[in-house]
Amino acid sequence: MASLQSDILTLQSSKYQSNDHRIPGKGSRQSSCSRSLHQVPSLYNGLRTKCKVQASVVISTESIRDEKEKDIIKGGSTQKSNHVAWQSVARERWEGELAVDGYIPKWLNGTYLRNGPGKFHVGDYNFRHLFDGYSTLVRLHFENGRLIAGHAQLESEAYKAAKKNNKICYREFSEVPKAENFLEYIGELAGLFSGDSLTDNANTGVIRLGDGRVVCLTETMKGSIQINPATLETMGKFEYTDKLGGLIHSAHPMVFNTEFITLLPDLIKPGYDVVRMLPGTNERTLIGRVDCRCGPAPGWVHSFPVTDNYVIVPEMPLRYCAENLLRAEPTPLYKFKWHPESRAFMHVVLRDTGEMVASVEVPLFVTFHFINAYEEKDENGKVVAVIADCCEHNADTTILDKLRLQELRSFSGKDVLPDARVGRFMIPLDGSPWGKLEAALPPEEHGKGMDMCSVNPKYVGKPYRYAYACGAQRPCNFPNTLTKIDLKEKTAKNWYDEGGVPSEPFFVGRPGANKEDDGVVISLISDKNGDGYALVLDGSTFTEIGRAKLPYGLPYGLHGCWVPAP
Image 1: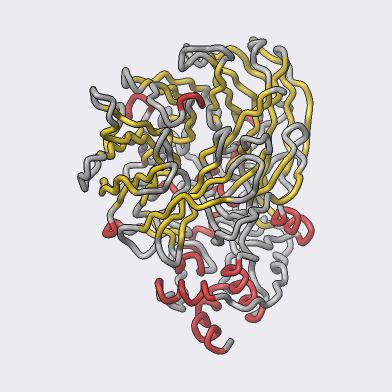
Image 2: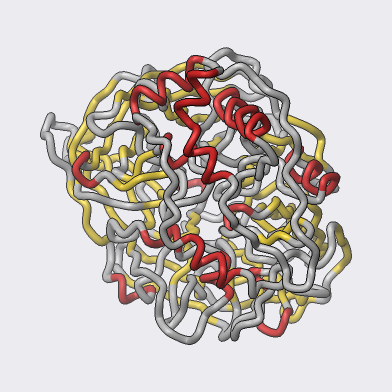
């Protein structure tokens, strides 16, 4: 214990630096939850050796930013922008039938589920970052032209503890529980390495497994929580029964009727385990391993693509950083660090065996979300390359800090959204050491904004033409349009409602359709003046065919899935 105390003594002092996000007029913040003291496992020593964590206090500009954030009032703002997209959800739960303006196709029968952060404060304390918010689930049930909507809070341990104790009790994306004393701090730090203090706030995505179970996810493995899609009730932890270990995984596994594939970043021996899980089980098995080509840690792997025969493993120079993970206060890159000197790579392994077939260096890139990938063949039918498309931010890491809630709530009319594009990787399979990255279409087609994408699920891993995403009508500080990308014609169709903030457009194909864009696109819009509505667009013409106003606007959400009618 004396050795550990020596190593982190001055880091501890930063734990007690003033970082008061109180709501004006409220009482002082309560202390964080007490933590029992755990023995620090060997992971601490491994990370310590690799990252040489320095015990020093870095005040930087956080105190200045925090002074600004004292103006925030429970998810709103005293500044110009007070958009419902960035406010805490009005209620914990609601359900009711919505009146539809226009029409909903009779063939659209099933349930669209959306997950995302929706509770941005605990007591009088306001969260810093969009990704900190506690999960709010939204349900849109379509049946014979009718629409029944509802929402509910996911009952994660993190959320339940916050409600009970009126304070943050687990490490969120940018938030750390505040310790009252040094012993409590050591216990919380030990809990970080054992995983006990990591959040299970599954606020990122929701998936339907091949066996019909529905699971909410985030990047911590413990943040895998099963729900009832018909009621939005939390059913309990989705426990993995294997012994693969680790604390984190990709927030976006690739899910098919026959298998679930994901990546497990290895922070000790930098690399990625490629694993699969079959329907009806909770056991993941190892497909293969990809070691990082360079850098002190694996690159952040929020998502990744697959093709019919390959798994593509991106190695981004925005890498996990144990030093930043240990800090009591966030840096502009939060749990990551930009390492341009470590370069960027794309690896390709066989989906069946895990055998490496290509590992190429590519231009530097930053992406949260891959769109799709497919195999490119020559005239003889031989696969000669893999094409992988993503929402690429021009290797600009500032997008992470632009998602601070203070930044989102204080839009003044200036154009501050960093540019983005559909980045297309070309990965040759002929042994070449180099791959290519270029824009798949002129970024001006979608306002140089690009994120939150979906495709026709029948075309995942296959050659495709259309993608649906959020683009930009500038000036803006966040993607504010829905866009249909035509990768053949290199054009885009854009839908825009002034003042609205749309969430991820989700494509549902018409039963029996033989055209890629024959279906509808569903989105939820956080509207101006505190309103909100569900939106249905024609997948082909990309024109509005129906909308249904909600009783009140909902916060911005992230990712969704489709549960077909029985």
